[in-house]
Image (cartoon, rainbow, N blue to C red; front, side, top):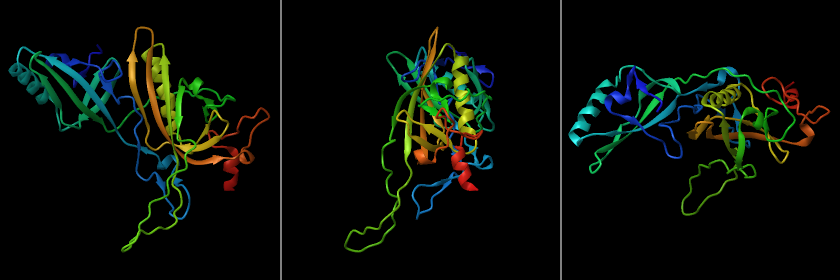
Length: 305
């Protein structure tokens, strides 16, 4: 148990015992996600393929994140469960942010959904599920590993050195769907040529670390990487190089904490700006792609001048 409290009062004092999320063994889900961007993220020029992303530091803003809590209550009767739940509901202050805290972290939140109670009469057990909203997520700084000359890397930093083991990469060979058409016709289906949209690459990896602090260090590296301005350079196992950015943050799911290790899955959707060709990648003598401090290829920067 990780001793969760809400505004300094423990869940246990209301008879609420932390449970386990599906495919994990802790009560929280979403607490370590990277939030999606908000505001104007990109511009879609209808007469051009793809999109134009907004990637300057003064154009990148992050929203909040949902934190799901799952617990249960064992009571002598339904009546006593109602009394305990009413006391907990009264403790929730809707007028301001509340402090959700435990051994795994601290978050400033409010309750953003209905609190769902499923009561089992035979066992006198109430299963409790609700969602907190953290409107402003905070992130600790991190030091990124040095660049290396490997495939399966981002900004020339291998996923392995970041602390993530690649499981799957999907949609990297797909052709994006055409952009939507708005046509009016009578009595016959109309068609008009349209440019293609952008490709979304679906990345799934696994993080395995000896303890939870080491697990969070890996996440802090990823937060820093994806909050940074400019595009990211994604180098695939097949040798292709994609210029990408992240607009929807990432999800950390299926967290399992054991005595000697912590593991979890990370899911990221990359928006592909373009795939770089061999002739326009500037490399050093060892084949390492030359990038600026933000991970953007030097060969791409030079085209802007």
